[in-house]
Structures are given as structure tokens and as C-alpha cells.
Image 1: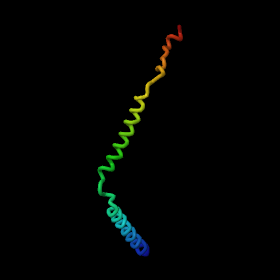
Image 2: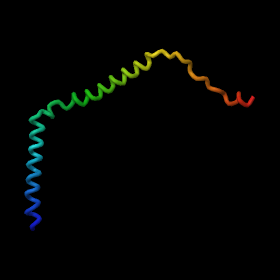
Image 3: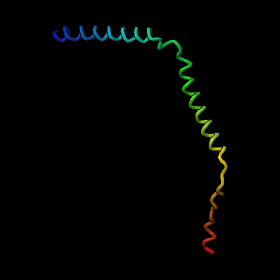
Image 4: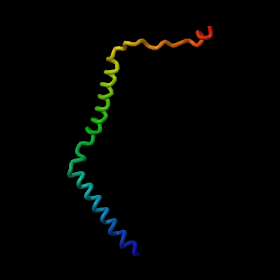
Length: 76
């Protein structure tokens, strides 16, 4: 029974803190536009990848590809 005198006030304090956290999140407009921010992150990443791929393909290759040696040539 003595533990109840300790646990009930703690649970009420945590409840009030949770309500305050939700109120603060709503008041600071964190839930206004949920879709655009998540899509913006993905689109920025795709745009960055396209730029990286574009830079890699735009570079002219001055060196020739390495020649592959046939293992049967070494035996001859």
C-alpha cells in the first residue's frame, strides 16, 4: 500500500508531462505538413544521386580498359 502512495503521484506527473509534450508539438506546428517533408528528403537524395551519376558518366575515360589475360596463354 505504501508503494501506491509513491507510484500514483509519479504516474500523474508523467501523464501531465506527456500532455504538455503533445500540446507543445501541436503548438509548434510539427504536425502541419507530414507528407511534403518526408517526400522532400527522398527527392533530395534522388537528385543528389542523379548528379553524382551524371558527373561519373560525363568524365571522358582516357585510359583503356585492362586487358584480361587468358590462363591458357601462360601454359603455351
